[in-house]
Length: 471
Image (cartoon, rainbow, N blue to C red; front, side):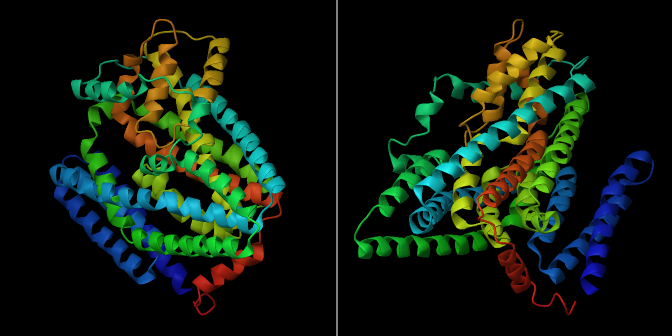
């Protein structure tokens, strides 16, 4: 009962802060500092509840709303706070490669067989392709219904054009995505944080280790990687203490950089994207979860932390280690988690693919180019191919978007630059859906392989909440 009271108080304060932003806009004659003071008092209450409950998710949400307030009130200070987000992401990137490598080797060499690995791989790719294709068409439907690009001004500031040119310069070199899957130098793959190449190397390494006849050598290596896996999860736990500070810094700097006038100009685009993402979650993810009889309440308890972290930092990488750890606690076997989640980071970008189809048609509408249904479907098939294997590339979504727009007669890559003004706000939504989609895919594949243990999930939850019955 005590838990519910404190959570109710937290949610009430959280909603009141949000309402005060809106109320202030309705009464411009009232002194703004009055609303500001009330908001800071309520936010102080949020942090008190977070401290008492000792839940990382509450700290993250509190830091998020404080970041919005500070970003609006102190833009110069907020720009300096961006470095906290960068430090957090650097630490996360440093642990991704050893964590994926160790968990994959232990999962495959220690417990799996080649036939099962092949099945998991085929099921994962089929699942990814089906779901991302649906996402593309939902994006098309959303933008055609909203007509968000019609009447939008095309002018982009010099700063936005400069950023656009910098991102587009990455696309000058032609890459063969199929060849690029395979590593030429594992040290280079780790340095560049190329998740897919690390997965491929780890899988081949694990298969080779499984074929070793000398049991002593094999067990020595497995013991080492089991120890490395455990250490990297503890490393993750330590780094996660910085998450609220990183969320605060990332969101405060994002708000400080946002141009409110440009946001109003493109508000319909941002709203269309978020509505489309919600529709996608409710009409695709929810039926999949119900069809595979996934316990939704327990699933949400495990994934709200990585998803909220992905939303506030706009980075899938920031959520990867905690998502892997939480899914194992949820009852998914180590080998499925270690294979499906990293692979999904390249092949299962549901939020990003939905955004790409939506944004491509938006640019055409903005420029007065009328695309036929056939042309739009053609764009979807092009995006299905070009959106693969680009995870971890800075500004990859914009680079792909620019390429798709450049293939439409009467348009050029520069026409898409105006979207960069609100890209950070849209990135938060599409990144969180990417993480949610990968977590769901992992549980679906695990259930189809009999690698999901609900009893383990219940045991883990009770161990984490020893005072649950007492409260």
